[in-house]
Amino acid sequence: MNSIKTFEIRYCFAGSQRTFTYQGARLSDSDTWYLAFLHSGCLITHDTPCGGTYRTMQTFAERSGVTLANWRELSEKN
Image (cartoon, rainbow, N blue to C red; front, side, top):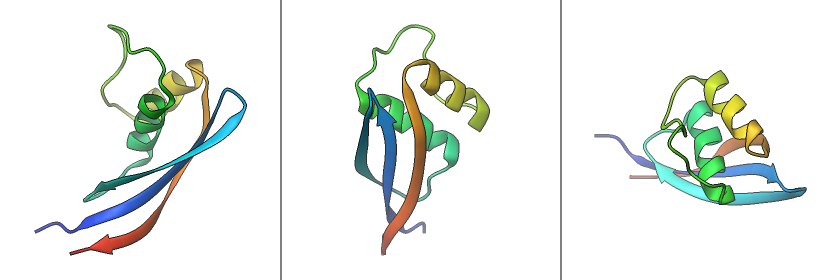
């Protein structure tokens, strides 16, 4: 059974730093870029990738204005 963990995601958008938390069993760097894109409120279009490699998600998010996305684990819940 996977335990649920809490992660903090930070990124920059439109000149300001933004932070939010995400709960899940795990988080990857590519997930971080995708979640930061969604959190930023950027328009989702027909060509918005729903996952992919780290480089694919980073490039896509950066073209949308999201930069410096990173994460850290805050805690673990059983």
